[in-house]
Amino acid sequence: MDLLGSCIIARLVIDNSFFNTNKESGLIENYLPIFIFMIIGLGIGLIAPTLGYLLGPKRPNPEKLSSYECGFDPFNDARAPFDVRYYLVAILFIIFDLETAFLIPWAVGFRKLGWFGIGAMGVFLGLLTIGFIYEWKKGALEWE
Image (cartoon, rainbow, N blue to C red; front, side, top):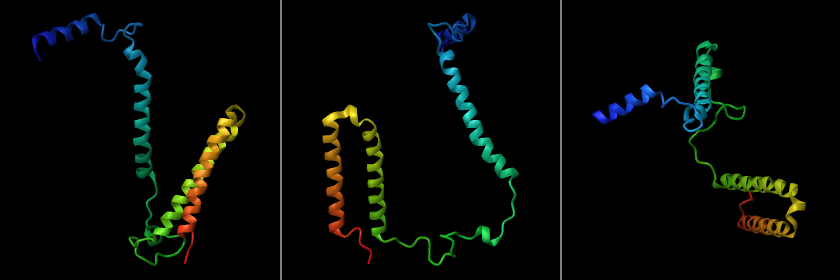
């Protein structure tokens, strides 16, 4: 560190202007609660799992250590590939679940939106209906 940097740091410490909490330089005053909150959150996030691991009972047995697959003993390798239709149905479920999530706020603000809101939701539902018909025609919903 050069001489000028040392002089500036010494001047800040002597004047105590670095830790000044007046309105002009209230940096510490404004960010101290956030810093304390982060320290407490980090502490709880580290201490709670550590205490659970150290104080929890450790009585392993073959039943606890075995793989769990829907209440049955595992009968196949866990790395076996799934049929792509499973993923298609899962994606369709997510799409239509999100549709419902968009319908609820629209229904709450229905009176304020007026005809523009009805038209926008009609376009949205129309596109989802076209997508659903396309998936239906492609056979994504059929299990053989």
